[in-house]
Image (cartoon, rainbow, N blue to C red; front, side):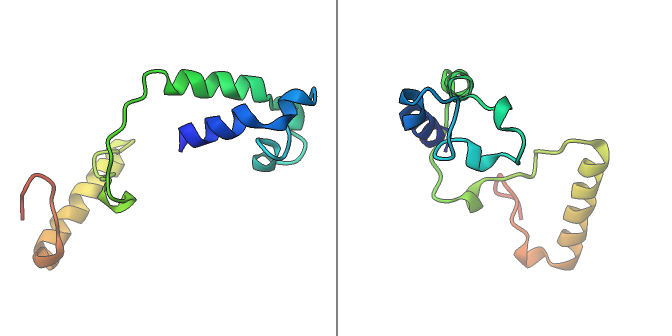
Length: 102
């Protein structure tokens, strides 16, 4: 997705029109009144920096990407553990664990 976004930003005609950005590449994705903060060149620099050492793995679909380990707080981790415990007790036949568990 980032590669596709970079391609759109890099090829936008606004670069030849002396504009910082256009609705074709960036302005359609920001709220009104913030257009003076958007720069195609800066966006391109940021995307290049992100993609410089980017490594990905192919998956058949987003349903195969686990967000289980992506907790941002202790309470979120506790909730995920409680939810898993509840699922094991309530519906073990439909709980799929990574790593070949139940």
